[in-house]
Length: 196
Image (cartoon, rainbow, N blue to C red; front, side, top):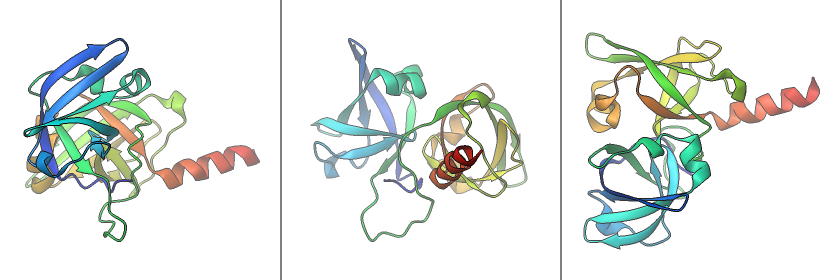
């Protein structure tokens, strides 16, 4: 489980296809603290460390993960948001994030405000995911508060700290992002569907 509070940004050093899998190697400033089998969120996708060499570690994404996320569009040199799994007893500064991406979304608008940024995203409606005003959403692994919630779109306000310390500073109109909708909202939706 994660909180959506990004620890650091990693840089892709290598991408290797093996059958339907993709081995992703990442340089990060916490690699020396990692161990094999550890779970790490990469742009919101929970992946397991399978190899460590110097300041680079490697994870493997399977076909289903590549189909549901933006990991298949990564290139060497790209920056990814990283968060290690939450420790039991830690403060939950963001919200409950599973690291299971529900679907991707597309950035449709970026507006620079006086001291902040407003990003707007659209997503396919057929997955039955939804947002609510002032509810939680995870975008590329970042826990954020929804503003301007619509049927298949929403906006988030990004403060300067988040902008500088995540890959939001790289996002432009047309960028594909990973979305994980609020887990409590997903359960409520499922329960309501059962009663209909």
